[in-house]
Length: 141
Image 1 (cartoon, rainbow, N blue to C red):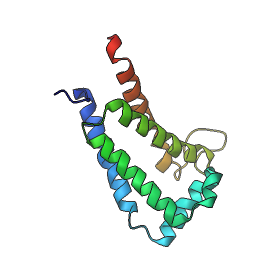
Image 2 (tube, rainbow, N blue to C red):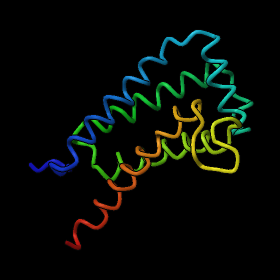
Image 3 (tube, helix red, strand yellow):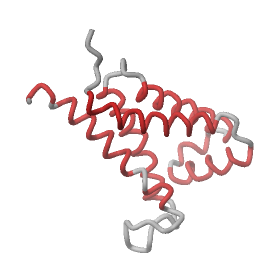
Image 4 (cartoon, rainbow, N blue to C red):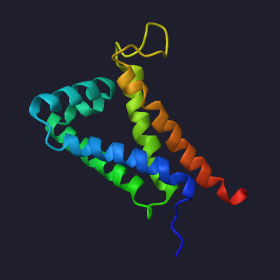
């Protein structure tokens, strides 16, 4: 039986999977203040989240991160699927970076000190897109 993962994908999947899984697990027991902060930032960028209670938002965020981290870590999940999830997740994070005031220097894409926390997530988008492109073009090699 051949696993749906290429050897070259193992290291980035392990690194990203562990990072995202840890992030999701750390949000599981978020207190009300933390939930309110995370929700506040998210709803300012994505207004439809206004209708979601902060505690519910953090539970959903945590579950999503745990699912994505686990998908990246499990070699039975095809890389194209894990990569698509990673690209979607990191796109949402980059949306926060691009739309939240104070994250970027005036008139620039360069991050402020506060924005570096979100700007660094551009590498996750690159890896996710790379996984998808690599898998979709694999048969043509």
